[in-house]
Length: 412
Image (cartoon, rainbow, N blue to C red):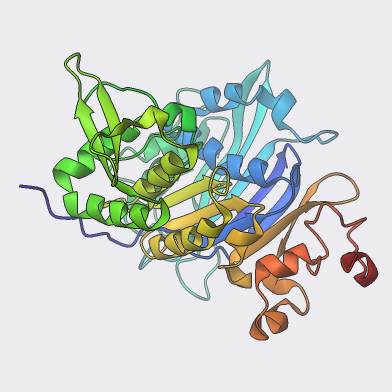
């Protein structure tokens, strides 16, 4: 018998992000994250770099700082051109029934090796109290306050780390004595940041169910097998959505081969014999992969999706945006795009526009902070239309020095 769908408990939510000295992100703030937050901007605006900050943090906690650091070319490639000082990431998040917590991480390099120069967790337990750090580390040395709700009057204990390239939250978060630290570690290690590759989804992995799609999508057949065995009602829902968007698609079948490989077969309604997934269209496989993530019976606390419009018909993008918003009731989503069709289903408060300033550094502006946008939306305009018309004034490849396109140029 298939298992029941796991009841989703409310996860922590990201509220704020500040990044310094991370490639083009010399000093960027993203405030007031919504359940669905979308990064908009032209090519080279910094969307992928900001997206990669989340991937970098997730890799640091899953595989270690040194691996994530080396994969990105170390300080030479990570540090903002012409800048000095460490790479800094500051994240504010909110757990249910707890005050907002700030996590600060600063990383520098000595002899080619990453060093955690500063790492701390800070909160203010009482509304009128002063914020205080209940975890505070510098280069592997520091203190932490244990307990479910650390207080400034509680005892601080020195807990040295074995190496200055270790993250204190990752190390201490494995112990029951530090539940708030452990909650942050569990939160970040649970993130799903997608780098979906259609070529990877066409593979033939060994049989065996997988509960969640890998970051590249190479285990898509295994996820379909898992849903088919454990959550058939959820898989049926995915197929119903697919049938509405892919003409004649009937079902996707995981087939176990004699040699133990797992193949996906796609059944078209007019034909008796299914075709192998490796012969299916890119858009079909991408839509299927995204839906397995958005309809996950036990969703991750945070999902990152980069440029979902690639390979998909523009008419399908408003529906995909609505799927993302529906999924955001149980998880937090970050999506990058430069598609006006995806944008048309969004509200101004959900969109952050990225652009480069005159010095070449990325800046961030909320769509609802742009004068006139909310009023035009009330009159029936959509965000995609406003962006194409140049009303944002930033984030448009045809805008010169931050000035909007002139009316006579817009009407040509």
